[in-house]
Image (tube, rainbow, N blue to C red; front, side):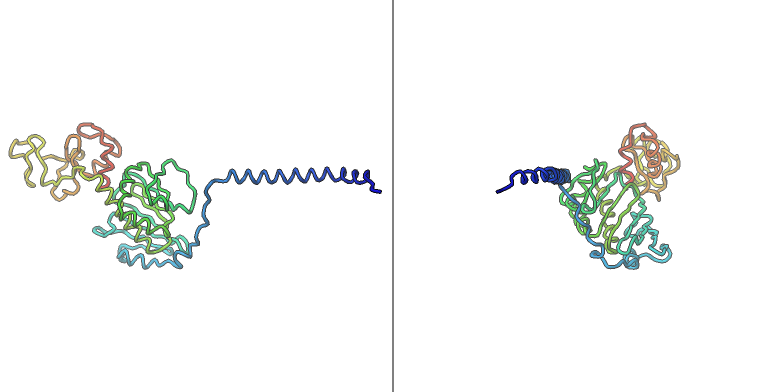
Length: 307
């Protein structure tokens, strides 16, 4: 005959540990489900091994492409610094510094002769997750890069250029990041040939920006006009032959505007007075108003620095 009392005793003894196990399992499952729900909808892809980009870096190849010679080249154990001569194809820069950052990466630094009016930061999208209020989108570049700037409309217009798009897309497997701020450039690339592509791209960006802000009032000194009667001055003429008013001088330094300085002279958009470009740039960096009529010229400074 079956001993039901014994069976009930065994079941009652096993019930508590079974209930405990069930509770523990349910709690663990619930926590796992919670973690899955809290996980972002996107994940960072595993970074492709750098070795797949380029097995080695050839700094001499970069030097050759820069057409650098010994008298303007400063070599170091892990790179070099190139002092860019005038009329060079990269004369946008005063100095370019190349450092072999690791076995397969190169860090590029550039000091520019011209200032950009707004910063542009470009980071390859598969390397990191970024949250930044300055992010903006430009298809199809935004599929590959994060783009950041304080003035997105300006850069959207620049990045519409098909040739600039092609350069950025050609660099997508070799560019880690690219910072362009005022007169400073910094980037990390994974190919020696990508260095030259990057420098070409920087020149294109500058030229495109310059075309957008052209027409800031550059003047040839030979064509200076009299403030009083608007009659043009002859290069050797010190007094206006029509009304007798003296030849204009720089409104800031009060020195003559020489014919040889024609590329360095501008006239202000507010009242039309003449000044050495370098002088008005220095002035506007400290004060935002015209030295003659006191009109606000802060917006004009950005244009001047691109010329």
